[in-house]
Length: 460
Image (cartoon, rainbow, N blue to C red; front, side, top):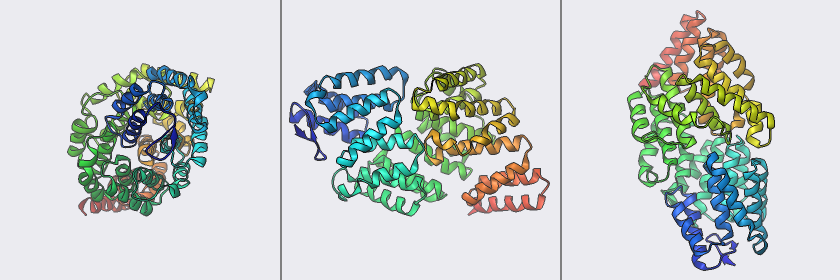
């Protein structure tokens, strides 16, 4: 047995193998590009490194690519060869990996949470549970999972900042913005390269509509996180959201082309970032050029994925926007077929929410806004189950408003926009949409007041 960098006993043939594993784990927590390099070194030093095979399988699963599913299962099989000589904690990691390979996101998360009860310093279990709570839309579980282990981590010790960054994100998604800001900023101060903590603070600025502060925060921290892996693209997307709300559309397009979609990528988060931003730009009259086609090319390869319904729905947006309705129909039918089997957690979600919401996306792009409304309205409080953050899921709230306006259902649009302006009182875009709804109802005076509110916010 060796002792890893966080004080946990692990089975390894040599200190060298354990050291390389530690570096791979730290690299993963920091979203570093050299994560795979260190893992290769660990397995080269000890081909039977149990946790090395487990974490390799986890990495394949995190990518949410069907082509890597068999590789993840192979990693589980390789780890299974050594299961008789490892600790109970390590065996639980294998059980979690096998559950995840079977598509049971509830089962694997339960395993990780069980590990954390007895081993609160197992930061790998913590980070993976954080991921699955996130893609279950369970903000409270994401927050509380970290809260349960906080006493085991002293402020300032190596690794504690990663834990505090996770807690900051959970706090922010639960609406405790002041505590999230304090925790996230402290984590970044201790480790400027902690992009998840940077991201947690970015979410606070987004949710509190602190546009200037949000842009300044991302600019001031950029040196620390810009060299991280592809997750940096998502942080650039957050900055673009601030510029979008300020109606600085040239800056948004520049960030799209030079930063978060600078190169074609099959990564589901990259595609989701791009689709969500192009949809917003399209609604205010900024042409997408050929950008939808590039996204649709990637999405058309993924119509049978269903590893994350969150990703499926963004594929649906790209296909519909590019006018590839046959491919969209294939995606929807595939989601329905997967949902009928209901074998995995995400297939069950596809049946409950995903296929219907994808159909609503297509209806909107085909001009059938009445159908889009009828499909989306009953689901508006179930969309959370697809996971992602409040900021990421906001596109579906905007789609519902867009469908109501385009269907001339101005009373519904006005009601939805009163709801939105109550949550986002400093959003010029929300006030402009409200003015549009009020004008549709013939309430010119109220519409004028809403437009003046938007203008005042933009001029502030």
